[in-house]
Length: 260
Image 1 (spheres, one colour):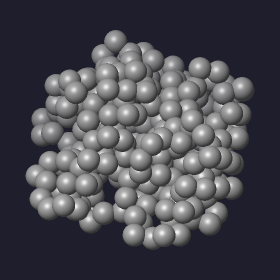
Image 2 (cartoon, one colour; image 1 turned 90 degrees about the vertical axis):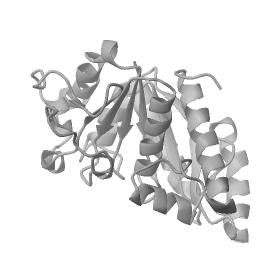
Image 3 (cartoon, helix red, strand yellow; image 1 turned 135 degrees about the horizontal axis):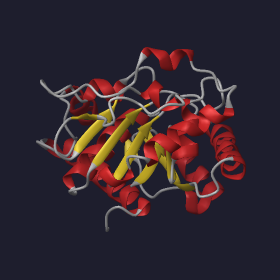
């Protein structure tokens, strides 16, 4: 099982939307997918409704406990898709106990034989209080970082990269930065496009190709609880579908779970 964290210290950059679509794409590729919602807002959990009659499974805060989460298996949504949902206790977690920071990695690895890929959605904060993003990075094989384009983003991305390097050096030397993904970009804004082109040379190979533009079709797909590439209508929707299919395929290929 490959574990991917979707992270950025800023909220509103599309982390949950990307995690959801990576889940859709991975399942469509025939993979056994485990979704983990470490964001107290629970957007990932809200997207995937419980299936009547299925066992609820344990929640994300249980991953920080010293014992084995119970029940043993995460909540099943289908034969190939399962979820560990967000819960209220996440809000009260503290990163003072560094051993607890490593526990999600241990618990998730115990499920490795049952899944091909694990996708972790994280809150818009990096640090030990709360510890969810740090714990996700400690557990992950790789991380992808969606980001919005603006005046302050260069500094924010530099801070994010420094945090990822700190996790690599102190906790998880195998952590691989798949890339920085421009997200919610206003493709009609000359300033944003120019700003993005200025950022690309700064981060070189770590900047993923293409971008995810701010499009109505994406918002509508999220509200309808389906991938943006389903039921395509119109040129704008087609462009959105192409962008999201390309981005998710690139990320999953770099993670090593599909061929591109």
